[in-house]
Amino acid sequence: MLEFIKKIKSSEIDIVEHTHKVIDECKKINREYNYFNFISEELALEQANNIKKQLKNNDKNIKNKKLLGVAVSVKDSICVKDVESTAGSRILKGYKPLFDATVIKKIKEEGAIIIGKTSQDEFGFGSFSVNIGIGFKVPKNPIDNERTCGGSSGGAAGITKKASFPHIALGESTGGSIAEPASFCDVFGLCPTYGLVSRYGLIDFGNSLDKIGPLGKTCYETALLQEAISGYDEKDSTSLNVPSQDYTNLGNKNIKNAKIGVIKEAFSEGVAKEVKKKIWEGIKKLESNGIKYEEISLELPIKYGLAAYYMIGTSEASTNLAKFCGMRYGISEKLEGNFNEYFTKIRSGNFSEEAKRRIILGTFARMSGYRDAYYIKAMKLRALMTQEYKKAFKKYDALISPTVAILPPKFRDIEKLTPLQNYMMDVMLVGPNVCGLPHLNVPVGYENKLPVGMLLIGDHLQEKKLLELGSLLEK
Ligand code: GLN
Image (tube, rainbow, N blue to C red; front, side):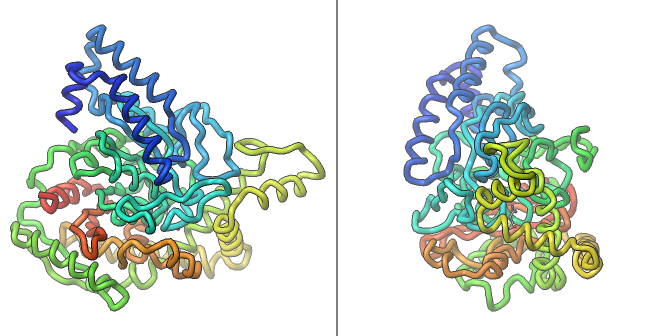
């Protein structure tokens, strides 16, 4: 990627010609794999032409841009000015934001070319990108198209693997939606510390859980995009005001003498033996590079993480979705009947099944009289889980588990799963997500021709350590 950026800067590669090729390839891939809800050809070419002009004029700022000419795909739930942004839902069809999300503003400033909005589960509700909005298409696994890409950032992970051109993706995770699809598609995926990346302009799923983060073919590329999007933003009240970090300088400075905790509970019977085998090979590789490990017990996240996550996630989602009623954003129809009748018609006709399920679950959990029994209890669990992690991080630099317990499943097997079995897919991931901890999926090789991913979890704001460990494994 560095080489590519250099060639763009020296005009050895013509940015406009290159972008035309990129868009053609995206269109071709999309015919078979459905990674994009929308390919933003017009915007991409406009950006490319601007860059070309600036290069021609020897504009002095242009040479410092970190992502100059790099294609970046954007999960559909992140707002891009004047580009349809639907979060994969028909209820938002036609919605073109009047503003850029902060992350988009930042990457545009760094010279990235925005190539399109990637497919996802509607509003992020799912783990296989099959809970799509009415009229959308399911993305297919780049390694075996009868299988899922994972989700909810499925399109993001798929195009990251499939693209032959330099590319990085912006994904989003509420309960695991960056690392899980990254694992199924054999790419890196970093979900940063909650608050490190601004959520301004992200179409909310659960405000206390949502994180925007990068997916890349290499650890370096993932770090590069993370560096570009991190930072305080006064437009997001939960944004962290911490000094900026250099993520791309991936030596082993922060992991010399590192000690890792391997989470025992994450290797139980339910985990596929192929997955366990690959993860242990990865651990041994780290060990042979001087990283010490110990097996540790971490009880709460795996036992109670899902319950806490689904309680908090659906409660927040059900309030967030209330604003989609056919009046302000996206779809609207002729106003007929009273408001209740109108809203009911719009909402019943345009949310798909999983969104409705979550609205009902979340509304139930928030009903008067139930608040203490459900929501408050889940928040207490969240605090206890955080304490348990924090205790572990006093001793260990990172924690390890598989990212997902199984290999990427076939679509026909997913159809047979109950909603609860669907929810269980993120059992390894809900812990760090609920506690706002950074986590990285690192590809550790193939078993039965399918990719396996290792999950590295770090303490708050320790993404650098994770990236250094990931880079060590990559080598
Ligand atoms: N699979 C989880 C869910 O369905 C997580 C989704 C996400 O992180 N956006 O809620």
